[in-house]
Length: 472
Image 1: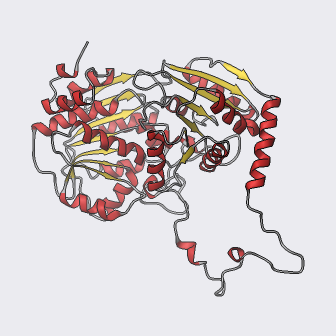
Image 2 (image 1 turned 30 degrees about the vertical axis):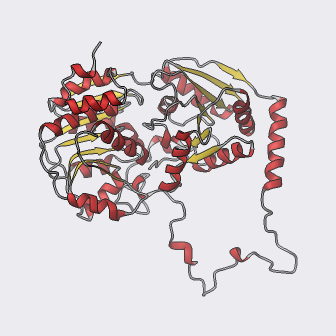
């Protein structure tokens, strides 16, 4: 069996790997590391959880250690593009962990935080820059970033970039890179547009494919429970009470749905936190930290948490709602059964979601065992009890009093001749800045406003509302 020590990696990297308890590379690491160390381009087709971050981070650090030159001012030697800030943070932490004995600088550039610290970090030059597309374009347009001396370019989760409408922004960023560079391209799937982008970027690449499209983690015990949509919250609370759920990620399609489910779990005495694109960076970090530390049993999330977020000991994944894109199911359940552990994936399926379930089973080439809890009287009783509790704890709504204008002050018209209220220019929870291409207009068709068509992940789902399409 191949060991990391057999791959010819720098001794400082091997020392860091030993301190983390890593001896044996995963299949994608064993196949990718030698070629990347030699400076070759790479096309990696790999599902989340296969160890692909180390597959590019280790050989990149090895190459930098073999050619120690100063990082270019306002630029970087290595650029890694990530679709979400959570994944970007995780990638940066991996570089820091593996390279802790080498002394290279690692910095993050993403939205939702102030520009100043990022601009100051870029000014002095960075060895490894991990960024999301929108904020990096902002810095390029302000000319506080310069990528002309970048030696290695990594594009991670390329198919999710497509879903978020980031292909044009990526091409804008690539236009700032030098032609003579090493390119590493990773994607879980290879739709036509991603294949074309890979063909444009890569030069005679090594091709590594691990875990074919649609495959699910072998150690995940999957099941589907059919239930009425309005009884899902009662069933979810019952699962937490009866199943051995130590730590679970619960997936919803919408941001508002995530908040509702988290609130419902809290009301049932189950500690929970929600994470989605309308949360501030500080709120998201606090929720993730609490979940990782075991301070809450449930993290309720939209699909921003389905890819790349590495959280140990997640015993269960619950699909409170099925995803519109079947590939997202594979990424969701990949959050459990990591590092050789077992895990469970439970999907709550309403009647109007059966078509989505059929798409998932067709993609994964399997029939998921199912159980029917429709017309279950115990769930009906729980649902009524939960509704009564919510009504009792909800604040009274304003209602007009006959013959008066007893309207609360917060609902009175703004004084001042019809001008805008003072808060109208503030950010009131819209999509975070890094989750959209920097150049956008009010009539742009793409999620980020770059004029592309809507990606398939933005289709309206059977229950109404809209999926979160701009994870940040």
